[in-house]
Structure formats: C-alpha cells, structure tokens
Length: 359
Image 1 (cartoon, one colour):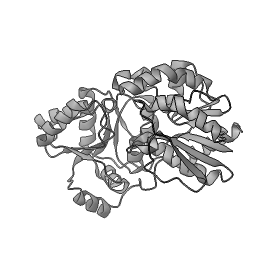
Image 2: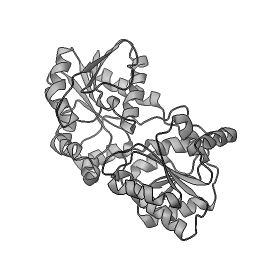
Image 3: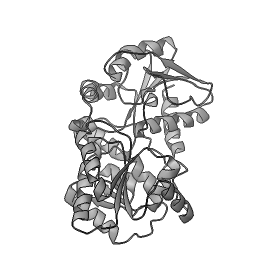
C-alpha cells in the first residue's frame, strides 16, 4: 500500500496539528513496514521523514491559500505517484480522488462553532469544502470523542474512528531538583499560573490576562506571575499590546520552549489554565495533567476529555477565569498520574486499522 499525506503542517511552525501528524507518521513507519508513504507540501518541510520509505513531494505554489494548492495540484500528483490511500490531515481532500481511497481527519469544527477566530483564507476554505469533503471521504477519523459527537450533531456524519493525541514521554511528574534547575534557567519563580497555546483569538488569552491583572490589582494574587508559552499566530494586535502593557503586573510571554522545559513549567505551576473558547481536544491540558499539574479548563466536552476528572472547570469569561484561578490558588492538591495516559502509539494503531480497512 502506498499512502499519500497532506504534509503542509510539517512545513510550518510548531502547532498541535503539526505534532499530531508528525507523531502518527512515526508510528505508521514502525507499524506498516510493508507500506510506502508520500508527503505532499507546497513548501519545504521542517522535519526529516521517518525513514527511507517516505518520499517528499514539494510543488511550490504562488496561490494565496494552501487549501487551493491542495485542491488543484495534489490529486494529480497522487495519482501519478500510484497512491492507493490519501490521508487528508487537515480534513479537506484534493479535488480529483476518483482513483484514490480517502481518509479525512477532523480536528475540530471551528468554522461552525467559532468562525470569527479563524484566518480568512482558512475560514473560507472550510466554508467551501469542509462538509462536502467529510461526507465523501471513505473514512472519517476524529481527534476526540467530543469532536465525533459534535460532528454528528452539526453535520450528521458518523466518525469511523477516534485517534486521540498522545502525550510525549517527557511529560511526566518532575523531580523537585529538575523543576528548580529548569525554572532557574528560564528565570521563573514560583508561584505562577501557566498558559500554553498559539497566540490567536480562540485561546481567549485576552480574557485570561485581564482576569489575572484584575486579581493582582485587587491584591488577591500579590506574588503570582502569569506565564504564557506559545508562538505568535493571527489577529494578535490587541493581544500584543496587552502583553506589553501587563508586564508590570506579572504577565510574561515566553514564546517557544523545549518539551523538557515545558514539562518543568507544567509541574512547577500552581495551575495550568486553558480558558479556550473552543478546542477540538486540547493537547496541552493532557500534557499538564500527565505532569501532575492542576488544570483549570473551560467546561466543554472536548476539554473534559483531555483535562480529566481532577480539573477545575470554568466558564471562559473574565469572571469565570478569576473564580478558577482563585480556587486553584487556595492550595495545590496532589494530582496523581492520569488513570489512563493518552498514547501516540494508540493513535497510530487506530490509523493503521483505518488504512488497512480501505485496502
């Protein structure tokens, strides 16, 4: 079997979808030794393929949208390469797939739930093609049961499988000396709250910062800092201004950090806060949980799935966030290892079963 893959996210910056695709690809390489793989992208990849059985096909494009490139170019390339199954890692399929079996992965339904938070090109691509492509795919995989349920409710489409994101081995409870050492290097002192995510509207970081600064001004969190880890995204003008303004109130943006540093930040935090307006799963919540951190999360099914039963669930409003942070600041109960750790290997196994079912 030869499997073609939309690898556009592997040419970009760190993101949840990028990690999802990369980790599953490494799993597929070990679990499907009889198969070959072709990675398609309009831009050079920023990762190395898992093995020699992986081809990389770069066809540059001046098109404004990578989705237009996917629609107009990839189907013909895949047929010419003898691909049997095409994995639409970003849900949307190439235009001409008559000779191919197709698997569409649905990460979220953001274009329906929170369209105003999306980049314009992405929003319009989803409005044009998302529903039709999900319905014509030979198999549909979601990244959470919450997304599967929402897909059925919104589009009437049943998911064929759920492949949840895993948690890397580096995200485990950390020895106290390791936490101290890592935090010292990062110039971080306890106590602090931590948020992780690309700087973009859906993450609701403006409300988080305003909630935190209000508590500081009221004298309720005098010694605390709010640390934000994540790369710049889109529609961030107001957010950037607040990041600069609130520096004097203990808000710090750390940009990108390594997984080893992030594990220490999770484990050393008073709480990890994820006040997103919407998530398809919420990988950072699962990572924080695996490190033993207390999680404060928006009360939606998808985050209940990733954050677990020990989390503090809130409304994603400044008032709700303030309530959750104050509750977390009262004390820090010991949070044990999750009753079931999410595994990238299991996610890859789900995809293997789906691919082989289409042979």
